[in-house]
Length: 484
Ligand SMILES: [Zn+2]
Image (cartoon, rainbow, N blue to C red; front, side):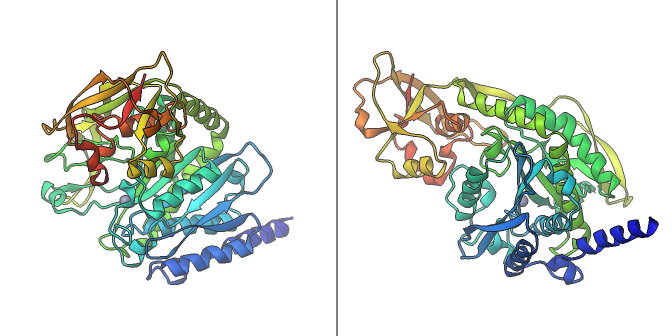
């Protein structure tokens, strides 16, 4: 009996050792190139029946971006999880960790999780940046600021993939760098192996945000601790003697909130980067792999509840409602935070009095029935098309009013993170609109909340934030109209 168990154990061990990643094969001395990554996922696809790969997109430099689809079949009520890594090319451990995750999946280590979860894995969003170790893509764009205007093939490909597989849960994997000189001058730096950030835009589902904060964050902290990795809640800003700390941005142009605003359970994972790209890479990659495994484990354990809450959130998004178009991170109470002390060379707990942990609304608008978008504006048409936003011919109805904003530009009231190009926007009724010149964009659709955030002229995270849409500010009469 013992001998049979031993044989089974050995079989399991050798099975998971069947698929060493390119980083492992190099003895952790060389980061995985795009060509090696493509070869690896192709090999795993050929060897494992429940894993297959497809080409999600080609980068601007013409490199292949594979998506790996993992489905062990069986239960048709499974939760679908989308994990994508390395939007920033100089944050390689997410990619290396994703390949380790794939290794473990191929080796049968996640069979139990995969009984309740299907996985769509994109280990490398930015192959051009990866291969020369830079943040941006092949034509100098930051992919993680591109999810609203969607001009880059890497980001377009990801959202097309999401349309095909309709994930309930998404995860965007990065690395943070604690090594800055201003931090050193302050005397402390962050030191967590892994950080996790929740959705922070308060137009996303409150139930999902609460589940993330109250259930997932404690879960992942314990999960990582058991495996020898430290954890901290994801935050930006600082050092705290210079600048306030907050839990990321409220913007919806990134990998996390662009899915969150459509109703997904969506988070960001950031491991700690090295002093250079290869520094400490074994620990960094294993930490990223452990954190992704934890995310999938939580999703599997709570699959039914997450599915139900995501379905509810998506139904709510489609209904006309109030949308907060200006928000601000505010201070609630002093908060303890662990930092590494340069003086003592040890971790120490500090009390922060400028950690802005809460987001409050500053300006809220009632959604219209729909927006009228001028057909002559090819960039707006492109925006609608890229997001698959429903738009139809406009047929005016008797009881409806068409409203236009008269906008004052220029005074730029400054929120801490955002400069608003619009200081005032006043609605007035407009008569005799030529319906044939406009697309009608109904608010009752999956992109409802996103549409209002993108199109209202005094939204702090709208299209006016981008050079590409500067033409919308030519005239005091804002060109996108509201049908009320
Ligand atoms: Zn990043």
